Length: 372
Image 1 (cartoon, rainbow, N blue to C red):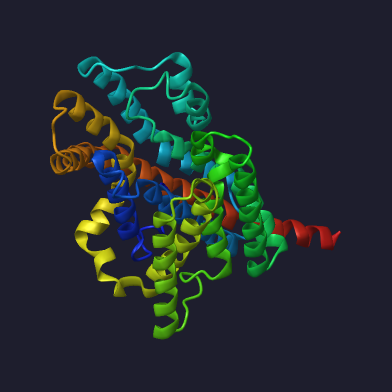
Image 2: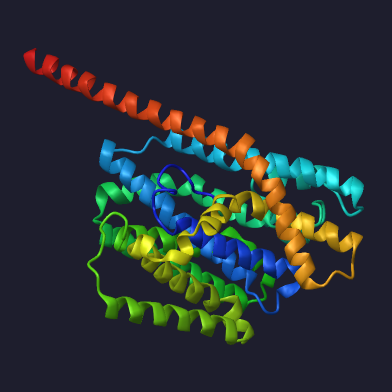
């Protein structure tokens, strides 16, 4: 959802995929949750984040032989933090205009420090304004960003890409087994659907794709029959995951099936690049570019609209909710996200200059040692 650090705009179709995912989420929250799989949109965001972050890390490691972890974490803070602070402030203000439950001190800390998913599981959303609950997925991604880069560096140094992918897929399998055990031993649906330990496999699936068969780093040969079979299989898996209503399946295997299908469709979108016109239209690219801000703010605005006009039909709620979200997201893009993106680029350029300067210094030290 949130990884847009340099190559995000260079890889065709990624903003279009974000656009599809955010439309699924907004439509579900606008009253179409029985018809539109909003949860699938979140899973797509997860898979995309794992793929893009791992691709970025692989490119950095190939160029420099390492990963600048300090710069990575600073870029994440600059990407995720400022829009979140703005939306938290807006949500606190909105509570005064449209009465609802507000922040407690504990709830505010949970949102700002990215453990909101576990807090909301335990507190049943008490202590956070209605509509801000979407931050549970940010917590899952932030936990991944915190723990994954050192692991990725070890995998890149010690394993071939296929072996690294296999290890990540094994981790996905372990999460599935854990989810199945929880589902059969009384865990709540909210825990299984929002906890990092039960949902991180979707992000790991994207990371495995970036190692195993990365169509951006190693463009595949064209094969229309292969691509048709893959696309058909992925769509069939998605339909299966939506139509099979067995409770145990929905709490366990559903997330694995959707992650696998999303990874396959992501592979096709990147492999075909700009030959997927619907994902590369100006509207799709724009909506994808503001998807993070729209994701943060849309449910707050939809909730406010429902409190003010409870009889609004779903189509009016969807149109107003999306339109108002874009009205908030555009100034955030111009005045918050763009300046922060520029700072992230400067940080990345500074890190590259430091690495280039360190290489000659290391060579000189080696020569001096040999001379002695």
